[in-house]
Amino acid sequence: MIISRLLRPAAAMTTAILLSACGTTYSLPGVTDDVTSRADTMFAQAKAAPARQLASPQVGEKRFRRVAHRIEPVARQFCEKELAQKKTVDCNVRLELDRKMQERNAYFTYAEAGNKSPVIRFSVPILQDAESDDEVAFILGHEYGHLIGQHIVKQQQQAMAGAIILGALAAYSNAQAASAGAYYDPNDVSRSMELGAAVGQIAFSQTYELESDMLGTRIAAAAGYDPVKGAGFFARDEAARSKTGQLSFWGTHPADSKRIAVVIATMEEIKAKKSLARKQTQ
Ligand SMILES: [Zn+2]
Image (cartoon, rainbow, N blue to C red; front, side, top):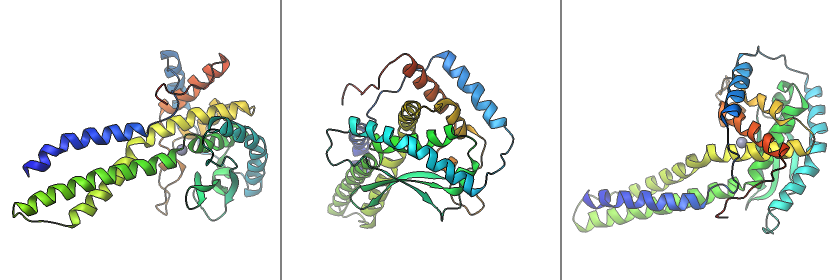
């Protein structure tokens, strides 16, 4: 239909403006050629590494408690400093084991509706798979990064913005079609809203992951761990899907050398005493 075709570029532009309003908070470090080549080497080495022997669940759990004890106060302070102006943000994150989950996975979520009770959970298998405290520290720092970057809240806003725009456009073009005597499909509105929600979530996931890597690097380093060594955990060549079809950590965190490069570049900034930089527009 002509009207909807005319509206499409305007919709794309409006969506882009709204989505960029929900972008990342911080500037990522610049990545030099030297950093890129170091990241490529590390990535290739990690990919070629032989399969790991799993530690016992007890060893994994002990490692989690040890690392959580050290990371938690550092990350809470970091969160409180960064989000001090947002009184509604709770930086008191519960660090828990997800004993039911059989996949090697770790995630950040809110335990209560309305983005309340932030919690980071690790499955026992991911802890059995970890080879050093640095790896667990980096993953934990990375998950805190999703809270500090306010990624869930922003994705909800994006999904809503996308759904409203596409839903409104479908309703408008349907109304035009109906008035012109053309076929009117009421399902078109809800389909567009679903599509809008999906588009908004996919658009930023990689950007948010990189921001979380950068924040996680700073948290792990401040707690005395080696984030570069820890980030090697991401780079390993693991099947994204398990036998049960569930996504593992690698399914939600696709590994590429760019992620390692951001971690190395962030470490360079830390060593050069460059502090965390907010974007100009924020
Ligand atoms: Zn993540």
